Image (cartoon, rainbow, N blue to C red; front, side, top):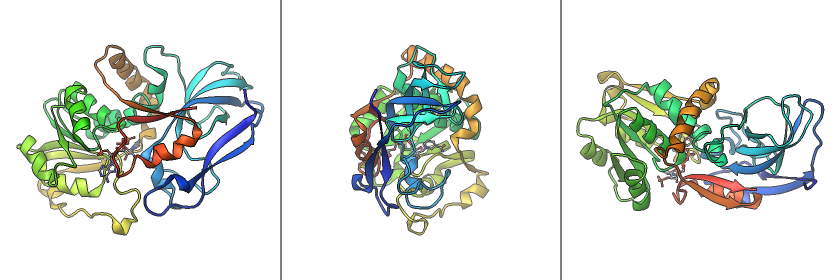
Amino acid sequence: MGDTLRRVVLNAPIVGRPEPADFRIVDEALPAPGEGQILFRILHASVDPGVRSRLSGGDSYSAALKPGETIDGFSIGEVIESRHEKWKAGDLAALVAGWASHFVSDGKGYLQRITDPRPPLTTWIGVLGVPGMTAWFGLHRVATVKEGETLLVTSAAGPVGASAGQIGKKAGMRVIGVAGGPEKCAWLTREAGFDAAIDRHATPDLAAAAKALAPKGVDVLFDNVGNATIDAVLPLMRPRGRIVVSGQVADYSAAPADRAGLKNTDRFITHRLRMEGLVVFDDVRAFPEAQDTMAGWIADGSFKYREERFKGLDAMPGAFCGLFESGDAFGRRIVDL
Ligand SMILES: NC(=O)c1ccc[n+]([C@@H]2O[C@H](COP(=O)([O-])OP(=O)(O)OC[C@H]3O[C@@H](n4cnc5c(N)ncnc54)[C@H](OP(=O)(O)O)[C@@H]3O)[C@@H](O)[C@H]2O)c1
């Protein structure tokens, strides 16, 4: 065990697209756990596009991260020292440890012990973690999906989108995904069981492409991308359709005034539509049941997921910045520490 805590911090509030130079690594003495605390060594950490909304100085679903604060993120940790009665050395957990080599926890907050041996460890910060839970509760609680409905998912090859599409299929829906590039689209239809996929780079008119695949319209839009996408799909929404606002990966780096607006809102009236966002932690008490079902699907091979692996804390800023625009990310980005 080293005696250094390494963590990634923000240099200054970011304007526009994030770059690796916006971050730096600081080395500090590793703190010892106090009474009631647990010291975790971080084995794997993930990067989340939603964190971008907290890096420009304004608050989002959580408070803005200030320069010098550890960048937020989900990790798999192993207890190396515990002064907490419920935790012992060697225990494994999924937790919010940020982009750091170690974390001292007081046992509160998002800290989930990992005991299920079926799924690979890293899935607990991937499809069994916040991305998969966002898909599950976005569909089952927010949209209350039904068999036979048509689901359109954007950024469908990402961990949230690919989970949403497959959860939709398991619920008996017809599922269309939007993703960037032929490789991602082929994976969605051949591996992940989507009924159809639209390559957003090859299709200037998303609405026309979606209409060709769903002539009767869309019952549920699960959107990870932002306003332009929602506005394009609004005219295709069927009566009583639901739009789940999961994420805004195309809009996070833009100031509100520079984002696309919604123009087709008359559809809300004529077709009795509902649009609702979610913060996945609202459903945290119900995670275990959903995770148990999805772990079973992973174990029996009926649920597919992709991971991209990076090595070392120094790789975290680059892994994060690649989530935006370039579209080179294909699956959950996991950094092995
Ligand atoms: N509400 C919640 O509680 C909650 C919780 C977790 C995550 N989320 C949100 O869920 C969304 C998906 O998260 P994720 O982790 O699965 O990430 P993700 O979808 O893999 O995000 C990266 C991908 O977004 C797409 N993208 C990037 N810029 C784009 C643009 N300008 N236009 C269209 N697509 C663009 C690219 O895919 P393509 O090239 O394939 O299009 C890129 O590979 C994010 O917006 C995230 O913030 C919400």
